[in-house]
Image (cartoon, rainbow, N blue to C red; front, top):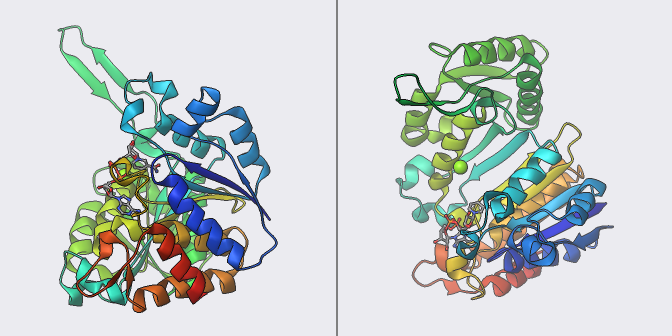
Length: 351
Ligand code: NAI
Ligand code: MG
């Protein structure tokens, strides 16, 4: 099992080191090879996604990524900026399925801005299509009209096969969970999502055990805050998923807790925390490594089909929290406040 380890910038190297430590503690047959990406790639090879890094990622079964970006690169031309490395690797690896679980650990019920009874026990999986929709549709751009006024255009676009492949991911995951899928669209006004809804209904015939429901995106935004526990698997397009998954992240308290997986058609994937490189706290050993460690668990589950060890890692994270270990972002009174490295050690000890 080959893993490309791309720590990136800011807190990236600190948090990735903890996930690597946890993976090593499991004594699996893993080959982990490190390479630079983002600002680190620019420093090493003048390119936010050096050829050697991309080749390594293509030759590996999975990619474990920290985060990219730092304010000091803001003045670079767009194609040299760290974020471009991330967008390119997602595109090059054809990672069309973005999985973002929003799971509230009981120990952190008080960390959410919502009332504990609304969020306690929350275990939601948002599946966002990642390579299509209005972000990539043509035509796009800003042009000047004949009357001198400027006009901006983006095009919402999905074809049947794109909808089908993300729909399948959602139904397959629902089969392993509670057999419920809520498909989010705006089929009342947008034809693209009217097709989305039709294809989801057709596809559902292949999954008779799964209960498919539909919701308009504006209502879904409201329901996520009103009663988030009504959802189990939610599947939606790129732009709706971008917004709803950020909204859902806040149900769980800290961005430092949220893992993610981005998969291609063969379950090859890239695994990374949902947060960025947090340059404001980089190098201080105070970042929360749990989102990255939980991303490594997702890697075992989705790419290596190793549910047992994925659950082992998740349980070890829970145990470390139950023992009172907290990084600063999730600290509460009377907790055992630890740094990034010590939190990694606590998870390894719990394993
Ligand atoms: P950010 O997610 O890096 O940080 C937002 C806030 O959350 C900061 O106060 C930070 O200290 C805190 N935070 C983030 N992760 C944390 C962790 N694990 N533990 C404790 N606190 C944590 O987003 P921001 O500040 O908007 O962007 C910083 C840089 O990261 C930029 O260069 C941006 O482009 C990049 N970025 C990269 C992403 C990626 O690599 N996937 C995603 C989002 C931003
Ligand atoms: Mg977003």
